[in-house]
Length: 374
Image (cartoon, rainbow, N blue to C red; front, side):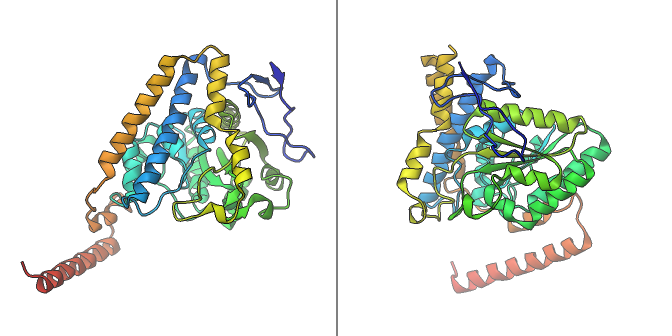
């Protein structure tokens, strides 16, 4: 058993990420954090991480085969996502960006529903809202404001819930995120900004995005708590998020969490990362693979068995098959459905717009039939 570096609040000259698992899988003792995950649940976290990795690969395959227009891989970020989501209550609202596949799985969202959104056979994903998960947000950082609005509602309702906005390091350079943090700080809202610092905002390295020692240091300017955590350590991520959520429920305000991880794949399937980063850098982070690391921990802890490996492999394969069957050549949705997803009840303006689109679609159909008579 080793001793982890002492955790310090954002503002100290040396801000070491919180760690509970060493690279070799041994346990680290931290002065401020301990694992909140019971032993009987740890294998479940491993299964979720492997399922996320396997489904991520299947999503990329589907895009390469022309079944999806685009996909944003989360390869390498499984621990950051599963660790965070597993530490929250089912009643807490989650606001993802577009790379949070592990968060969706941890919340029990059917990957076919996520795939429907990437294929555009669904206007907002299926199975998300029912599990207190907002739709994916492609515009960078804007959903942080939505999450803060939900946190203000939770505060006024006094329902004990916490809201979490998931962003990347690049989003912290956006004005929307600044406004969200400032608002959350001023009103002491039960809000967590969970930054997955995967080192690259498309082709811009994190070192070119800020002059502060870390993203977590930015919490100082808002007068809130900032924590850095090893994003490739699933137990550390869970512990830090659980503590921040506890503080938020107790009325102690928001927390900015920086999960230090790495995007092993491309920014999206339309990106070529070989144009801006070196193979040696990727190889270094592959040695810190969060799944391999956690498997080593399970082995050292006596929680691993061949049966665990077999069951995990089989469950991931079933999910891949389900995703493929749901996505391949799936029919397009009725365009008019988009008007059903704006307000609970239609407004006169929306009804007018829907009627106009219906007329245009009908005219287009008549035009096609005239050009190509049967």
